[in-house]
Amino acid sequence: MPDRPDQLTDRLRHSAVDDAQGIGFGVVMAAFGMHILTHMGFVTGQTTGLAVLIAHLTGLPFPAVYFAVTLPFLGLAWRRMGARFALKTLVTTAALSALVAVLPQWIELGRIEPAVAAILFGLLFGIAGLAAIRHGGSFGGLSVLWIELQDRTGFPAGHAQLLSDVVIFGLAALVLPFDTLGYSFLGAAVFSLFLAVNHRRDRYVAV
Image (tube, rainbow, N blue to C red; front, side):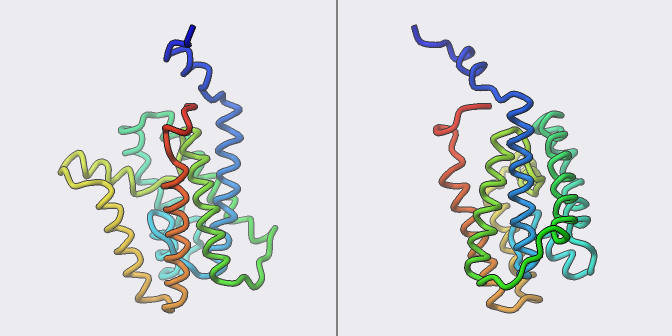
């Protein structure tokens, strides 16, 4: 006799250990990706790209800027996605910021072919984001703000996200060499493609 939907959901629900290891894995992958990103002087879209630009223009440490940029969105995340999601996001972003701060002391990067670096950080960001999403968390972001904007005004969140990334890359074009900007765009494209192919509910049903 087929399982009822509620029985199937219970069977596929992640345990606390599942979530901890999944988010921990995502944090490590994202930290390594950010290490490559900052080492190469690249930029990307969304919250990470905004933090990179602010750190570049102010000289402030990137990990601290990244954590500060994510904080204002936690209230929205709490209201829209619930306390569990918001708290997981807070823990995830705090752990990521701390690891990004100490990782250069543990791993010293040398020369990396820019195209290879761009593809690597795109893949690392993609797999990190996927791990966090599948275990009920996130690395913070502007996406929650754009969903709120969509609800209030009807303007599509996807369009708002795209426009915000265009603005970030437009500002980056004012301060970064053209080749660095091009490699940054390659990395962002790899990241987006990875999520588009792999983040599908019809292929992954555990919660």
